[in-house]
Image 1 (cartoon, helix red, strand yellow):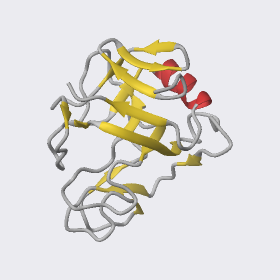
Image 2 (cartoon, one colour; image 1 turned 90 degrees about the vertical axis):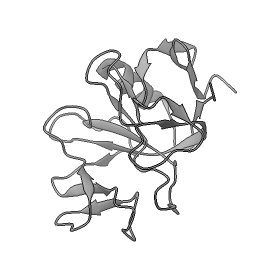
Image 3 (spheres, helix red, strand yellow; image 1 turned 180 degrees about the vertical axis):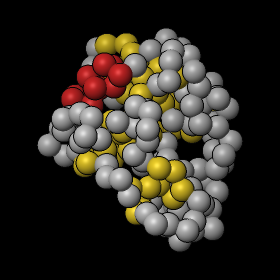
Image 4 (cartoon, rainbow, N blue to C red; image 1 turned 180 degrees about the horizontal axis):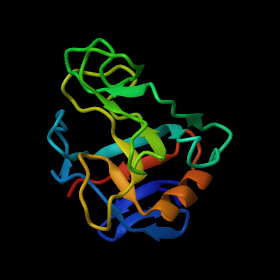
Length: 166
């Protein structure tokens, strides 16, 4: 591990010499992540992208991609595009990326079960804004808004997210 890694500790995520309180999945950590289990997958994951709401925030980095009204994320284990960004209209089960709440105003994408997804092993493990301190996610890692923006300004594609086993 290096200071350039995002590392989950009992106190939060350690990154670039700082500590950021965070929330993880309501199912805790898991070596055997499954779709819908609410767990945050253990292991070493890479940041592979960044999405943002251009109607709400400025581009956080030059490599960030704007989220449009038709942008979705497939979470249907029977879908050939499972765990991929897709566009509306979309018949298979999906999650809207352009939400009415601020949780996905800024999203860091991880390579969990991506790009060659194995159906059922979990989708959409993002770093995003939390609802409130301590409120668990569906498996993502969530932060206070200003902390997420600071992290986004300092990560690069390939930055490692390390979720140790308990």
